Length: 244
Image (cartoon, rainbow, N blue to C red; front, side):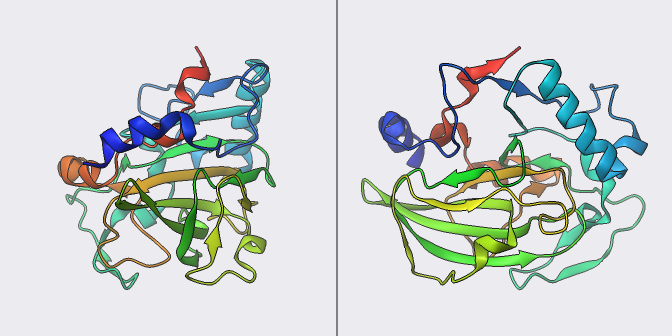
């Protein structure tokens, strides 16, 4: 199992963000139905949604916001992208779901919210598995996936909502060193039309996907997806800095 290996090596991972533990704090965002501040109008309007993110960070004196793993989010009602069933790793989707069908709402990664242009570091040595510009409203936008080998076990990390500049000169197989800045948070026109943030996800088996991997699943399929996508904080090691 990869989880004991990640726990054993947790103190050795390089921070994924320029986060100073002595002076920075994290605000924990709640994007479930419990958050009464999230109206349908707010989450549908990217400018209003971005203003909400900035306001919460400022009010709580936090440089970044964080949250989302294993979270059942009403947030995804903002895009029909999450009302479609995944059909194949070829990035094709099934026809629109019927009104009674189950949409995808369970988040499989951790989101870190902050300014566009925020540097992203590789937590360990790896190589580029694949990359793509997933340019649908609500999708990842610019995306990079790395492959790692740790104690003889291979796995992957996905970085979504990046800048398009991050994809320049990118090629599968390129070596990325631990602590190397290899990407950055993107702006809305390049990150799937979201307020700037990083979607970080651990993936054990890519299951044939390239440049993309589902970051949201149906709640009825929760166990099978989470088994392949363990808690990102095993690498991020950031939840301990949340300001409640």
